Length: 471
Image (cartoon, rainbow, N blue to C red; front, side, top):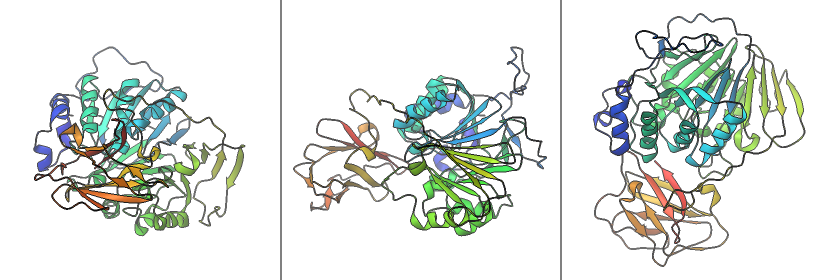
């Protein structure tokens, strides 16, 4: 199935994408997906396997197979403000998202630490950089058998680069279809609940949503899907009841509605979120809602979280520094919520933090996340044409000679003699106006930001990339 196969009457999807994305799209459109039906320990046959077909199967009446002899482990990898989830079962692996670009090495190192040399499925829930930024590093480090995408087009360089790599490596490309299942393993059901037949205008709401079931244990992985998708799922007749919920959109108030949490009724909720992130995630009201319903784990507090199940019991291991301790989950959980239907054991283990050096690309300086700098791009509004820069340091910062650029460096704004006060923000508008301490004007008579998707880059006066924000 080619990349266009999943696009449903969307004008943006019909328009040719520029640069690498267009080239990748044309080649991927001819890519056929092989259905590989092999026993778990059988080597791949070199004989012709017959007609090619896609590896997403129709989800008819579910006949649950007995759990296999092994355990299913789902790793919620700590990639800061982003998502990356690894599924392991019976020698098979699936990676869902790969965090920001500077986290690609972190994800790769973590997989290698698990003894993984190849990945059966890589899933990109949607094309925001905090989910696919690290994909190129992963795709270039492992042999990947299948790539599953939401199918919704995006014009960012991050997405284009990912498509180019998929094309160059001739990785079979599939578009997720609601109601189908990913053929991960006969003992593990991986059902696609979203996106639907028609795409939303909100990129987050087009996230691939997966329900993973093994025996009596189930996981609901929401990507960045929010209230709109939750309403659709509740009205779609799906069995949403799940033991473990990966909260949508980093537990932002844009998702995890009260009715939805009641429908899912999780025993455990996982929040993938960065410490001290610029967005205030998780939002307080959502965190309280999840804590009332379940035991909550967060990657900013707990590090990487691994949930292992034999289909009837569940073990949670958090990657925190400290002595090992074991807590048996019975009766009422520590936060007051009723315990889930399956027994839960939690362990806190001491582990060495993964360290990696991020090399900057030629001509762009060192790439760092905004969390590493006092001055960062805190917001970007593509339609209203403005960008916000924030200084969270205790001292003012002279921005003279600093630059703002869009994707592809088509437009550049250079700060003149301007000082950004401590704990303050300045908004840079595209059009004409009179500069003040809180508002600056680019002076452009034409739009700068691409409404279909763009990235703002902030460089210091030495040309080092200080911060970036993709919308």
